[in-house]
Image (tube, rainbow, N blue to C red; front, side):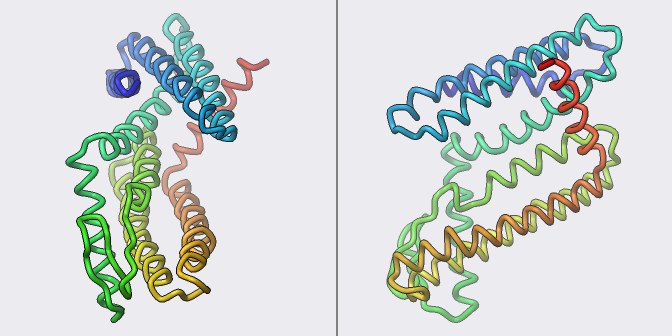
Length: 263
């Protein structure tokens, strides 16, 4: 079903970047959201097989919301007041840019290998700078104090990078300078914090700072760095919304239009 996803993202990109004079923007956008709903619904069976009912609920919700957005977007084609529907073009831009960034790194092997190996190498560099014994045992593995840690895509912060890139791109009307400022405050900072996260977790595991190596990994990865990451993302989000109030306007507009449709 990955083909369905790429079709969806392609349609959303076209909708996001066609000139405002083209009514077909809304046709492309609505079609893109329908294909996205199909993609989300295709994941339900896999999660049911795994008995992962939380993700079942999430993908069903995502499917329903995508269909609702598609319905509203299609309505704009024949509506004279297209201005109030522009928020859904901005939303399509955010979804397409964020989705393209993430799935390019998730599905294209060259990019996937590059970002994982880069994070691995930079994590090793930081651990060495602290003065701990560290070695690279594979292109995606480092060993601290002789204990191996594997770096996977989730360890690269690409999800957060894609999310903020999409959000920043959706700020219709914002100046290039403000968009660059928002980008520099978010993406590079998130990436650098992630290198610290990887290095800290690998070191805690290697030296068993919080009990056994396994207990240390759990505490450092799922409690300490998770809390730090959430705090950092909250602060970054607050700053981004201050720099780009257009994003707040878009979110507010989408919520209002969806409330009207629900009623």
